[in-house]
Image (cartoon, rainbow, N blue to C red; front, side, top):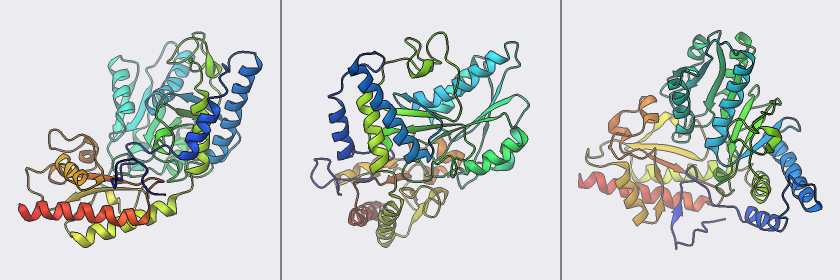
Length: 401
């Protein structure tokens, strides 16, 4: 398909940061804008909008989760969906256990800030107790450690299914089977924001046994501003109209706010056109890796990202990079040469990200780690070109010392 950024020959390889909006998604949104009725009203216009939501929901359930059961709660972003998942489980527990004890939540140390910072906030309010499990160097959380961390009061395990920086994938169906055999009432939430179109998100496959699932539109061809939370069971509505956003009681009393009908339609279309691209992504990244390593042999693939994990993602560090060089500097040179990539995270201190440190990536590699991630618009030839650009930039840095 090729880049459509309108910036000459720039190659955009930061899909995990955000994707372009797919042209068919743009068209679907523009068409849906003609249907301006409020879906909460009983007019014919409102009923048309409500029907668009219903048909979009059925499409998403089938295309992403491979089911016609379950519920979708539409939200504004992945952050809101993750925090809503936590509140659904937490408030349900509090309602049935008004005298306590304080519930326990289990997670990992490599979660997105939307999850880990929120959980630490709840812990500071004494609403939960919290255990954060550290992954191995592969980026996967050890199953025995998760199992031994369960407590009688554990109500929720929340894990990032596909890590946004490293691409590492948690075996959530296996985790679910193991933990629920010991704790059958445990709820499991997957932050699958980076997973759609890259790894199985079906509730009978990759996410079997998972109760709540976050997906985020701008990670696979939709605009920013639309996300959802899948729930396998129905949660009761609140008297205030929502578990986080209170008000008119939209989304069956679980999340207030007038539904963004055009973006819901666009999200549905994205699940049709951006969902089965794993083989193409793999070919693009193989070409990238081959071109990169033909230019330079000082490459380190963090968390085995060249062999395991998301097919569209590589977490790349380099040996022999001068200590004064950080990922931000390499990124700026790459853009001058026509390539847009990202760091593992913002590296203003030059010490790399907390995710890389938790995965036992040393600071000498972490400070210059880059994340390269392709999307539906990239081609195999662009993969080759991108690898050559990065390889030549890093080779020149090393040679200059």
